[in-house]
Image (cartoon, rainbow, N blue to C red; front, side):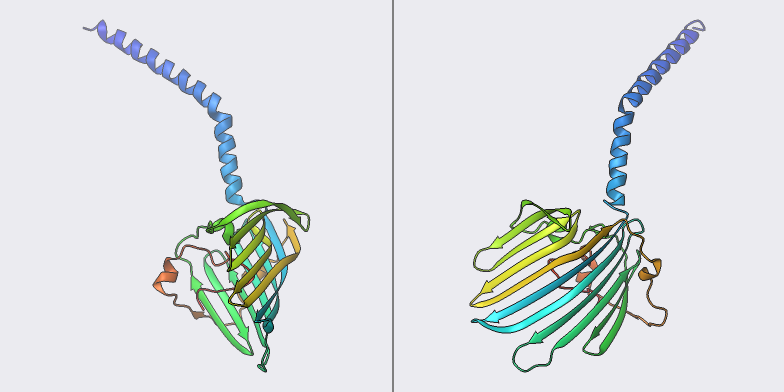
Length: 262
């Protein structure tokens, strides 16, 4: 019995050494693949660029039985700190309603600092300031604003590839005959151009936007991602349905802007 025990011990050591050699061989053979996979995941988490600044102009025109009823023009600037997970948008629009009403002006600025949303709206001389907490992470990364990619829109198809300001864009088309046709030009998740044609019962609306500047890996002033010290923000109270919505507020269909906490 005593002689058997050393034999078993030696056999156990031999098995352990064989297992270690096999494990080492597997580790060496799979190491580069594992490192490549980890690098790809890290790159996806970091994003396609360190930062990006995009400026777009947009316009919209509505007619009813051939007569103009509404026209709008506007401008949007997006400051996106991909590395820091922060975003700021500045939006302004001028709306003219045909029929004697005064033009309407609106400017919106909102900031996401990674934890809180801050927004202030000036509309026709009246200002509203609100903030909201983020309890859970959103489904979309901080730079990706194209709803056609992030929300997998029904009926939308990839129809080609074109350049906008020298950036290669995927072109998506969505069409519901007799109602609406949309197109988007998306660069690495960022919308650089979009068009919408809506036609129903002789009421037509055409809306378009296009980037006039799109710069990547630029240095953005960190103060842009901080709310003004001189402004007091009211804590917003979104509805339970909006609180449960995991879609990021920066994901959009077109140039229109909607803040869930206002």
